[in-house]
Every structure is written in C-alpha cells, then in structure tokens.
Image (cartoon, rainbow over all chains, first blue to last red; front, top):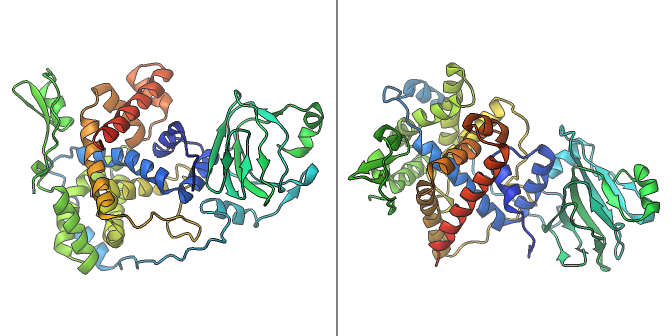
Length: 214
Length: 223
C-alpha cells in the first residue's frame, strides 16, 4: 500500500504542464503506480475540461465537416488494447523508455556496495538517477542544497520517521537532514531527482563526493 | 435531462458581456451559472453520442459531437499557435482522435469535455514540440490500475466532476483567471505575472489558494 504521496505543489505544476522534465519523470513514475494520485490529477485536469467547455467561438465557425468526414472514412478506430500486467516489471513508463534509450539498466558501483545509474534528459538543471542500496545499508547522512524527490521502485527504506516501499514518494529540502536505510530483507532501488548536489554530513564523504557523482 | 449547477453567487455588478464569457447569466442582480443544457448538449447526451461512435461508428452522432466541440477546440488551439491554418489542422486531428479513441472513453472516470480537452492538449504538445511531457502509460505492464470500483464510487466520481465545475464557478474572478492561464493556457508563472501585472509570488499563492478552495469544495460535498 502506498502511504506517501505527491505534494500538491508538484501535482499542480505537473497538471499545468510547467514542471521540468526531470521532476515530471518522478511524478509520472509515482502516478503510474498510484491510482489515488491519478484521481487527484483527474480533478485538476477537470479544470481544463471546464475551460474548454467555456470557450466561446463565433457561431459562424462550424468547422469543416466535409474534410472531417473524409478523414474518418479513411481511418480505422483504434483497436481496444487489453494490457497484460506484470509484477516483475521494475521500471514503469515513462522511466523505462528513458533507461532503454540509455542502452538499458547499467549500474555503476559506488563505495560501500551501493550503485547508481544516471539518466540523461534534456533538462540540464536537475540530476536524475536510479540508486541501489544493499540490504541493511544506508546512504550517508545528508541534507540538500535544493529539492530531492525519491520514488521507491523496489525494496523498502526507513528514513528515521517512516518506512517507504514501492511507489512511495519522499520529498526533502534543505530543512531535512536524513539517512535513508534499506531494510535488511532486500536491496532497495529508488528513482532520485535533485536540483543541487547533496550536502553530506561526513567530511570524508564530502571529500570523495565529486567521484560519487551524487 | 437538465443539469443545472446549484450555485448562486451573491449580488454582483459584473457587466453582462463579462458574465457571458464566464458562462454566467445575470438575473435580478444575481449571477447564476448557465445550465449545461443551454448548450443543447448535457452530460448524458454527450456520453450517449460518444458511446454511439464507440459501439457502431455512428457518423451522425459524431457529426453532432464535432459541431459542438470543434469550434471550442479550434479556439483552444489558437491559444498555442497563432497560425489559424495550423490551429484548424490540429483541431481536425484532435477530433479525428476523438473518433478513433471513442471506445476508450469511460464516463465513470470523468466528463466528456475533460477527455476531449486531454486529447486536444496532447495533440498541441506533440504538434508544437514544446518539449517532452513525461507521462504514464495505462497499457504498461508495470502500471497499477484502479481497482474495479463499486457502483457507488463510480457515481461519486461523476458527482466530483460536476462539483469541480460548480466550485470553479464559485471562485473569485482573479482566481478563475490564474487557473485558466496556468491549467488551461499552460502559461509559465512569469508570463501570468506579466499579463496580470502582479508579482510572481502572488501568482503562485493565488493558484495554490484557488486549488485549496476547489479541494475543500470537493470534500464539503462528500460529507
């Protein structure tokens, strides 16, 4: 059961089409897994539907029905697709397409057993990556220069306050210092988006931070 | 079936032309939302027309839908492409998508105009290549679908869509403006600030406040 959902600000910006690409991937990944937040999105999109109905067009504008008729006569209705569901699929769309474009899932090892895969987007302002934390291990304690969004894809982590599992979202900013720890039963894979480098508490970690790429 | 929105705003002195553009009818000093049936196509009728297209490719039904929506969709497209010819082409393509995807419309999930709005929006995003808009795919194996909903939950969703419309009507004009500019015209906050000549921070807080009011209006009616 997903317990941690998207904050309204993110969902509002996403619904209004102004959320940058990297953050949108994070939001869309959660939405793929969360019917509750999709319902919230539906409500916001209802605003768009309302304004479409309110469009006052000149009564002389009846469109071009003959052209429309020609188009529908030379088209076929979309076939109804019956989707198959798979519990084994780690990466929901649209994330999976980004990883496939990058040549598939390729982990780069980090000190301590963790691993990451950076994902390229056209958005230069934010970093987006997959992070794999071994069972029972933690990301070193850190705060944030900007905003950090995490979506759990597999396994679970605990951040000192609560447990996060598949689909759960954690959003953290400079006011939060935390140390997410993967539970001991399985490794934890997360999608992470951030707009500034992490601020590690440990001086040693800060020294090697440029090599970690996080 | 006539659907009228049960909202009355207080006495207001808005000019009639503006009232009309907000779909309000000024009567004895009170502003009342125009009943949906004034447009000749209420919710049930729209749903029935789309179903006719989905089930038997009913061209006459589609013609009614087309004539109702294409002027609105053209106006919508004109907001994103100043070129009339391109806007009309995008509107035709959007209505063609309505024809082809009719079987995918589920009236229990929301209103027809919202569904058509989303088709139109995806069309203009793709056509004008304003940048990728990462979105989920309901046919993706990893997608978690809604549980099969009980009939009463389905009914609630339909009611929610109506309540949302009513709640938008009940907002103050400056809140309606920012909602329209952000959610519908997809203007960046800076552009909204420039258009309304207000500070950037005010744009964001006004949008937030408007959304809070909409959410609490939805919750109110669930009591």
